[in-house]
Length: 109
Length: 211
Image (cartoon, rainbow over all chains, first blue to last red; front, side):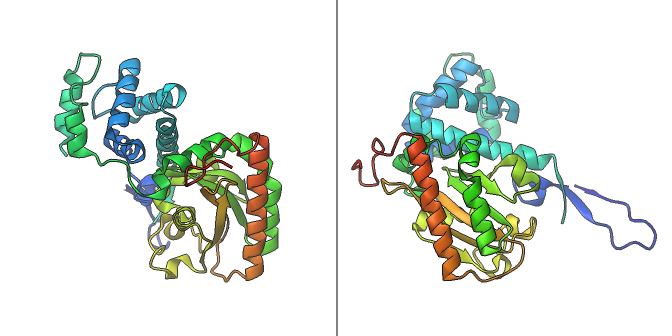
């Protein structure tokens, strides 16, 4: 978060944050995605699909950057044989897209 | 949950299946399927069958309806929102600007239309900042939305896949005629989606029955 410099005599400086932070939206994590998918299909089916996706994409671990998370999510959307998993992955990708768009914007609070 | 611990396990995993990704881990850290209607498999299958979360498909199919409800209710924004398990997709939009027009999605926890899906009923908030359920919603606090009215998008098989809604930047009441106009437009939007998708006959209803 940064603070703008006000001109002399101007109104109080506006506090500017990126749009995601201003709205309390945090960067999605692997755990967020596993939790959402598990809520739809249960942990067993989620694990099966996620394992396939990580093997196929080579994206292992819980600390994936959003770029790799996006690759795993897109693989699931394109290739998962479990249709509800594909839907949950579409949802996760939509949240990620929202985060990415907002992170590029700036908002006065 | 120790993220660092699992991250280390993942980084060390050379095997095809990550070492941390086990049934035991899942049993410890994750719940089973939830009872939240947003997570219901059959409802999500209905969304999938209709392609209702495909913005490029739904926008041209519904923009006249959304322009109509916007003009009819006097609200500047009309939306067809499809609610997935953790996000709502703004599949159709009239009057949308800024980041919402670019992202065409919001997190589900910001989605007023998620309330419509959960209750299966119309949801009206004349002043988002004065209602305890919505006063902290970023769409109100940061984006300046003040009034909302939404009605269910109910498929012929009975699934509520989202909501057709209008939003205003000023607090206001919505009349019975406003809601009736939204309901007519929502029904027409579903009819068009089902017609383009080849009918809803193959989609199981909430009780498992097919139409």
